[in-house]
Amino acid sequence: MSLPHAILTALLEKPSSGLELTRRFDKSIGFFWSATHQQIYRELGRLEASGLIRALAATGPVRGQKKEYEVLPAGRAELERWTAAGDGPKTIREPLLLRLRAAAVVGAAGLDAELNRHLAHHRAQLDAYLAIEQRDFPPEKEADENRLQHAVLRAGIGLETFWVEWLSGTLAALPPSDQP
Image (cartoon, rainbow, N blue to C red):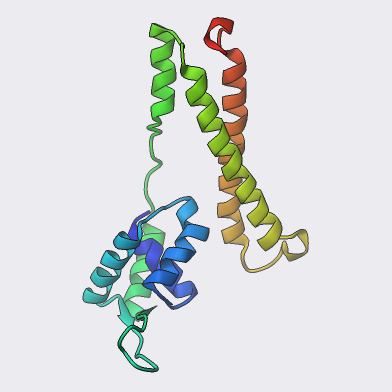
């Protein structure tokens, strides 16, 4: 996924200012595709210059007012083209797995702290995803039009569940001398 396509997606859902996009990224898209405030603003400028989005006309005084953007037909066509094109699966490049492999050679002393740090992160992320699921996708809305959004969230839940289980098992498997 690329940042321009993430922004086009968010703007098609709801025309927004750069600040609103940043906040929305923090609450949804940012869970699987993060971007800084500066990156979003820079990309908005590029998308506007390329004719994929435009700033909406200001409804009041221009000075200090946020620019809101909307997607133009060319932007929607680009997002449709990109969605249909697809990418090949990505190979995992996880430094923690490399550290674990190295620990098999040089010893696992101190590795428990790093594993516990990762475990705390993944538990917190899983809790956040489960709270979003409970809030936004209750069972009575199962057949709602947001099924694909729920599928993305379920992927996040599945990945975080995997990491929590794997990290817990790996910590339990550390040799006793490598644990506090």
